Length: 222
Image (tube, one colour):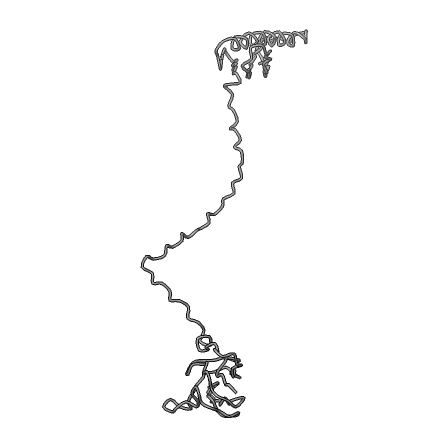
C-alpha cells in the first residue's frame, strides 16, 4: 500500500538554551488509490506506518530545534519534497506595538497681564484740591461772641443788587429784625434779619459765595 504524507511544522523558540521546545505540527495523511493496489488484510498496518513516520519527523524537528537554539540562528526554513518546516526564535516573531501611556494634560490659558504704564515724565502736576466753597467762604469769628448763623443753604449777598450799597458794614449799629443780607436759594431772594440789637463787629461770610446751613454770617456785639 502506497502512502503520501504531507507535514507542515511551525515552531516558536525563545532565546533560552535550557528550555525544552516541543514543536507543534499538523499532519495530513492521504492514501491515493492505486490501480494495482490490493486491499490489505491487516487494518493496523497503515496506522503503524503513519505513527512511525510522525515519530521520525518529531525526532528530526527536535534536532533542528536544538540546532537553532544552540547557534546564532533566528529563523530556519527547511523544505523537502512535500514537507516544509519553519523554526523561528521568539526574537523573530512580530512584537505587538508598545501601548502608549495616556497622560492627561491640563492646559491652562495664560493670564494676560498688562504691564503698568509708566507715568509720563512731563505730566502736569495736579493742582491742589481747592477747599470747599462753604469752608472758604466762612471765616472763623475772632470774637468770642456767638455769630448769627445762616438758616438755609444758598448764596450770600451783602447788598440787594450788584450796583447797590451793602445792607450793613462793620461798626454799624443794627436793630433786632433789621435786614442784614440776602440768601439766594432756588431762585428766591431770602432776607436774613438780625436776631438781636447791637453793633456789627465782624462779617464772616464772603459776598457772592455759597453758604450752607449754620454757616456763621455776622458777629453782633450787644
